[in-house]
Length: 232
Image 1 (tube, one colour):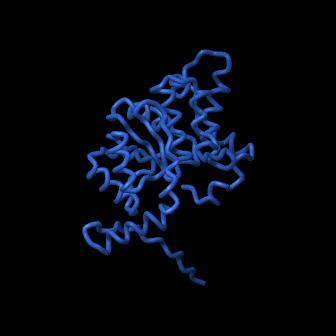
Image 2: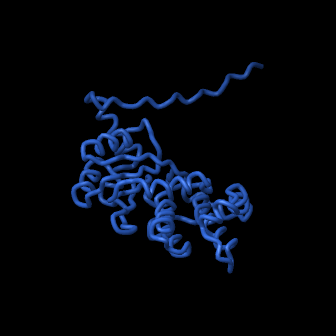
Image 3: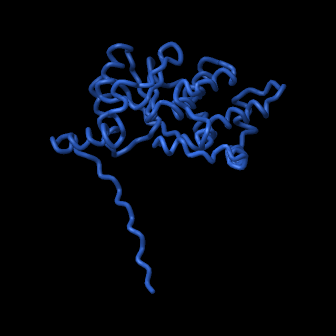
């Protein structure tokens, strides 16, 4: 018997913002498909330090407010570039507000690579402030990036910086998003009573695959709360 191959999902085609129908579609993708209606009155907005904030996905009006009220000059999009309406409208809103949009993709259910960690460090040193960083919910990827900012820019100890990953910001350790917590826990465990710096540990001792394996083997990632909540 000849098996019929599974239907392959077609790549998403970006909406054309230059047409009324395309713009309407982009807003529908932002408000409904990306759950933007939930973020109209709750931005999960928090200041990390002088001239730096974290939040969930902003809509065009919120981007204009960030530029006008807080003087934001750079927005770091932790979701990565996309053809979806939320990204197209964000890119347009940043251009109109004179804000530099930086796409720096992170993953919420994986251990961060060394390239991502040091890439974040270099990014913090190069962007124009004031700045805002965001993911979809402002909980997990924004928490990881905020913690790295606290370590590299504010020179906070890891124990303090890791508090950027907490339920205060809607982050869940219960589930695979707990891999982000496991990353910092691995440093604290390995450093022990030594004086090895975070950067030296990442460079010489950190093994992302080993940390992930240990986390999954522990059973801590079995709960699927993050997926039930439709997190990215």
